[in-house]
Length: 125
Image (cartoon, rainbow, N blue to C red; front, side, top):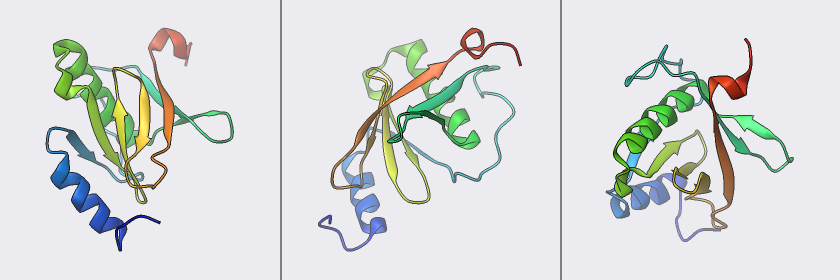
């Protein structure tokens, strides 16, 4: 259990205490954007799941993560090395410099590996 009555209360507290983090909210079912706002992107983002396999982020999160990663990669600004994504149930912080995902709401703050695959790693379509 967390010290919060509701998940919304925990998320509100998190938003108030972490203003330097870039916050991205996207529902898992949101439609994907056709390309990155910075430029065409041929990458996939995955996280390492409890079952020992790599899972794809939702299409909306793919675009959000890639846009944020490209901005961080161009600037190497430490403040941009972390981004938050919101699912229906949890808020996660992705750290590009460590390539990890951490659950900010769950009391265990589970940390997982993430990876970004480029077009060469993805192979022919």
